[in-house]
Image (cartoon, rainbow, N blue to C red; front, side, top):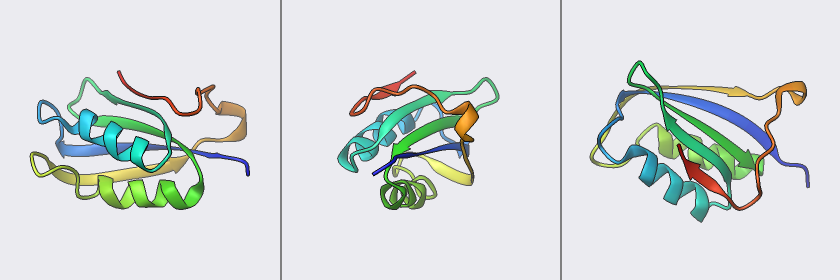
Length: 95
């Protein structure tokens, strides 16, 4: 089965609250690869690579986030085939 790649940009109180760590744990539990990284403007970017059904579950979780965070908005877009990133399967990094 071919994997999908989606990028999520999460805004709200999502930095300095363990958001990337919790996202990494959730993604790994769902069998997803990718990364979570802080952006300079206070948002968090998440790349999720894996089965579409699991990515949808992560999307639902990102809209809530860990109890330490306050999520205001999640923007999701699929990565075009020409822009797909080379991600090691089974690795979800905190950048």
